[in-house]
Length: 566
Ligand code: SAH
Picture (cartoon, rainbow, N blue to C red):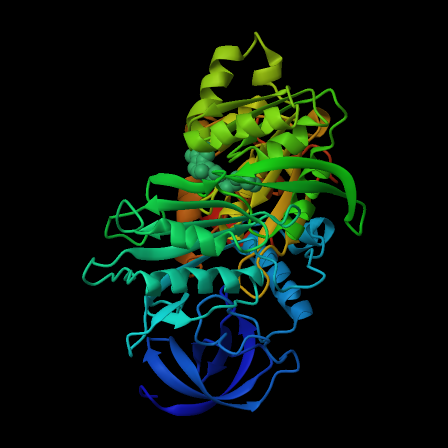
């Protein structure tokens, strides 16, 4: 096989970003825009030792899951990787993605996942769902002013005035901005030269209030004839906030530090309703949020209501509980929780967001939520150390909710959660790989996976959000511990080889196979080797823990034999 060779390829799987995967001549190929079930003529683009990248030359037999994409430019634009896949199949793919990460990275077993995984929560109508859009402004080859989106993995702008994921109001707003620029001879920003003024147009839309915010991100400190812009934009129904944000740096980060409101309020308001039951029926219970241009706010309001309602349901509150909400942003989940709990503590790294959170509590008349600025991995241990034994509300909460960014929770944060021993942990995640990693740590530390529910916040893209419930294993079937296994091994008469030595032996003799401490302990127990007093194995037979697969058990037994432990 050489670069540029064409070959027939059956797409049998899908990668994490929705790319098609097929096998040919012992090699695995990744193909953008090919869907599971397609038979294609592929052209090899890049070849590595046993895998490669190819592109679709021709679709020979289309996949049964293929649908006509609504957007004519979905292939060029970087936004929607899987728009050509039927929505039901998209939801299935996202569920599989979460499941596979929990299996491979989290080490949970198929049986365990069968019991806890629930189907992905989808949308009724998966278009026009985004309440926020950021359009870069530039010029096309002929020098015409354009707004649009970056083509995938590039910085060249594909002209778009009406993205089908965004609200239809965007089109009129972009037109008004372009007219203003043309009339006043204002140039778009050019990344190469660093010249030009307008970089991006940020638009936010309150789905429940119909309030609109427009913020122009500019490479300068003022807008000429800004009255022209205001006149044009205020003709649009719902216009509530017009501002500019100063970003004069040569950077890919969209927003700069300073925002100046030039008309109306500096924020828009939106409501998030509580939803109930299996069908997520909207209730009258709602919380109002003020959103400023810089605040983090979930982009899909319909699904956010479902996500937060699930998080609240999983928290299982009766009104008596104390709850920590870590990575709380502008207090969105915290205020939902506060309505049903005795006391909520929120932690967030961005000071402006905490200011918004406090304001949001106040406009909703919520007095039982307190917010702290700082890193979760610093604030939580500090409070735990200073309040343990004195104030259980803070140091021994009933529930801890976490909603970290993609990199997941810091180890120190997880370790503190384990020390605080809440009855339940609710984990909201936007990256199922780091979720799986963190869940393993929590489960090894004494928690049991109860529910996993993916929620489709980003239809047509490869991303998936999940909400997970963990509960503490009961004291009578779990002995809780903090021990260094190697220390235990070195001093106890139970072993001859340390866990690390066993792992090394297994890997070396089984093609790099990885085994966890838990599996080693399970096999040791099976072989009649007594474990250290506190080792965290469930006492009752039916307590749920991942069980060591046969293949790994055999490998560990081999190692134990080699070290003459059995
Ligand atoms: N729960 C909120 C925000 C979730 S996004 C909501 O649903 O709207 C994740 C948040 O974590 C962001 O607001 C980000 O600023 C914050 N964050 C990132 N790293 C953090 C850290 N180490 N400690 C606390 N907050 C952090």
